[in-house]
Image 1 (cartoon, helix red, strand yellow):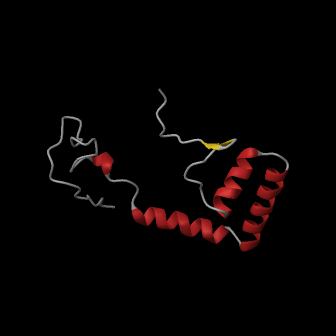
Image 2 (image 1 turned 90 degrees about the horizontal axis):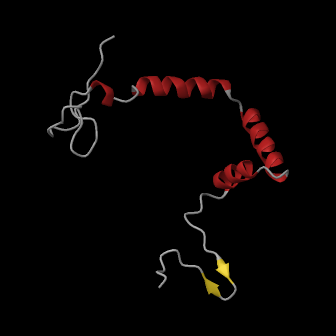
Image 3 (image 1 turned 60 degrees about the vertical axis):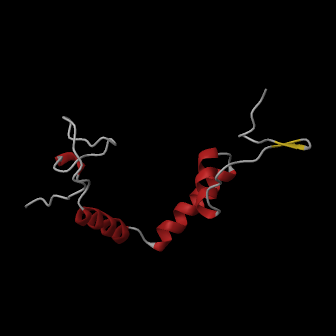
Length: 104
């Protein structure tokens, strides 16, 4: 099977085959990534093995673990159900914590 080479950039590379920005340079055999056809085959295999009932069972187990106090399960469940919180605001009495505030 012949390997396709991807052209990233014509920028000069250092002796290690990397561009000045640190990315793999053109012609570096390690910078190709996983072939997309392989990724698609793996996704198809997973979808073929997982039924909607399997997904429901996994979610129910995640809920059960979160309710029993598993913090990681609660985090995964809430991240997937509600979305990730970009940052937290901590309320301290009447003052609001500002992470960018400079202290003297």
